[in-house]
Length: 496
Image (cartoon, rainbow, N blue to C red):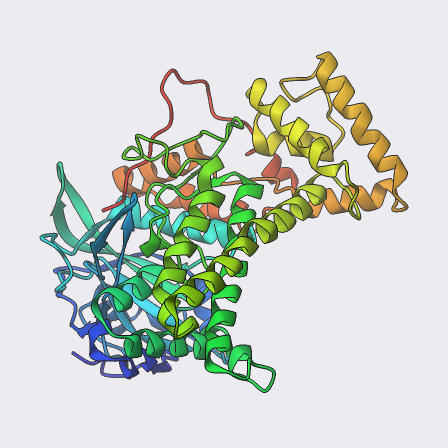
């Protein structure tokens, strides 16, 4: 049902996705819930979207956030897509989410407004289409923390409890998350079009993505021929994903489920199911309970990103050249750019974390040696760089060893050779090394308090601490402590 519009909330929705061929979506209304209650609302994001945060708490808008009503201009739909999940191709789609429309913000930017946990769709594959409170709060927490870390990400506008129980291994409280994204077009969307549609469908989707995310490819400086434009699209997506994954690596973020349906064409992080942050540095770190083979381990993320992009390239072949063999050659040439661009962005980020200006041939070896020492001594990733930033050289676990002394000497030599002052290096390190990250044990404390005791104060306090992670305040210093020792590894689960 439509809202009555009694309050001027600021909804300004359009529906460009419905201009794509019908195969890409199914029009669908949310299934109403019994007793919705807003438990968290993102005021800052609401204002960015041009929405009145107070009006969002009204009965009419609570109905919208729960799926019991529609804002003006909404045309709800479930998106169709496919994807490789742990290397195996399958048909997918929004099995528990609905796109309400695209909100045009005061800045002129357009954002998808999606409800997650809003009920069954034709793509539910036997599921109930619902979500439970804990995982929805987890996505809210981590996505907002990632935004604070200056990493492109979907964001969370609100979490609403439904007043209903959802049956999993036990009965759990139901909830609906309002997710905000530049769009929800995925690598898996292109795979779906290539597998089940025609070359015309793939072209329509590519044109849509260019118009929405890469307008420069359709402007006066765009490639003169059609094939060149789509090759440029592939190139641009490759670069964005290389930059995104490099930023993940620089803060120790482990996505946990890098299936092709979880890689967006906009270059935003999406899907915060089994994600977590590394404490002790180890490239083999895996948190997801279902990733028994380590496919999506921290150190594998760049390789998986490249693999996913190869699947995108396969889906675009019909647009790259009339001759398939030539199209493959063109795609392969572009895919080689991923590693080089990733490495360049990652190295530049690591130089920043060490206060290094410019580029010197020995920088990569210096960085790799530090990481080797951190892994050998199980040193905390975030805190090691904080110790270097603040001159607390006795804190890292490798302190006191000849190897650490040797590395520090090489680092000092590199710092001394650059023209920039030590204070300039320190400022660079302060802006490159977060004072705080969403420590896994702190996230769990916040979720336990909210889910088990309806206490959201822990969550809000941590969100405040994580909102400006490069501020390096006295209050933040209380939250840099590594988690207490445990004889069992931390495990996360795909949120449902």
